[in-house]
Image (cartoon, rainbow, N blue to C red; front, side, top):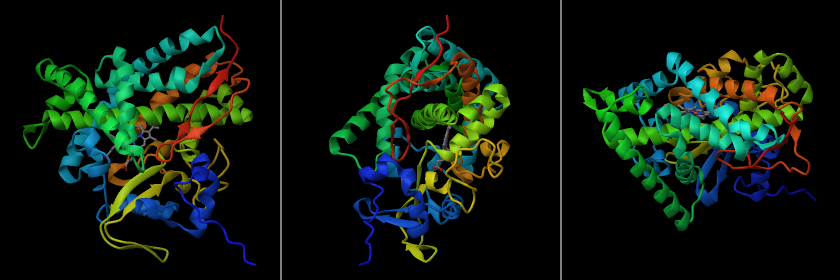
Length: 406
Ligand code: HEM
């Protein structure tokens, strides 16, 4: 009797528990996977994902009008095209590169020192809850020029906004909750925008307020949307990447020892962490015309999800793709944070991440400070590792023990 393999669903609990177990099957058997419950297509091969992200005529970001705009309170960068996109993207890029980047690393160091201090004598810290989440939000607030003391309120609103964007289906109650969070975040930002228009500083909000597009200053709605865009885009992937980096190094003690001996290897370890376990797992697009991938057709108008985790482990591009190896030659550490990256963790094409250089510097800086402080770092006794998230994915917690610092 033929063995019937049960149909895989990316919406199942089994898939959510460990998507990586299923990626090879998706790439090999159903590289164009249809999910009827949400009427969407999932692409898992590196070549197909790259094509969708770089063919901007055939695959647009139109879907973000319903997936993001309601909680962003206006259009985000990823929705824009042409001259408007280039001009507004440039403002954000400038705020996260060059001299601005060096100033921001001072904020990264100060936040790291302050957040880790209470845990050093105890010899135990949850790298997600105690450190990573407050760290990533506080650093983003510093860069934007918002008050770091507001981080808990902002983090709560931010999580509602992120839930809206990253949920594949939402109950009406959760939808209302997410929209409430977005409204409160907007109400918090509007007086700040008004104040920065009158008294500009060096921060990103002031720069957005001062910027002109076609000779016209951006409206409060446009500025609000870009602030929320940066807040949501930068905080969550950063704290997930930091936790995943430590997890992989603890799981590979010989590679951890090498990084401790030669901190220059940290960049390679971060690049490989991004390839191996990308914090942003799905990127949505809309097919503008019928598109054929290896014989299967995605119809015009369909929503397409690019599966970054699956594409990054495609054996057509990476040798031994399921191994974590900071020395792999097919990745290329330097280009991993540029438009020439082989992995797709920062996306590709016009909308590739504007924060890649910042993310690299931020995670390098914080990890280089934490590693010497967390001597003999290991999982706490009884700790059970669990990841969550289909759209963005990372450790639920990461309780670590280390030699207490007297
Ligand atoms: C490890 C950290 C990060 C990862 C993995 C990541 C991932 C991504 C990905 C996958 C995209 C493409 C989305 C698409 O094509 O629809 C993107 C876009 C974007 N990212 Fe990041 N990101 C990170 C850090 C940051 C930081 C620190 C910032 C802060 C500035 C940032 C700001 C943005 C913005 C504004 C966009 C939209 C760009 C556009 O549409 O032109 N990201 N990011």
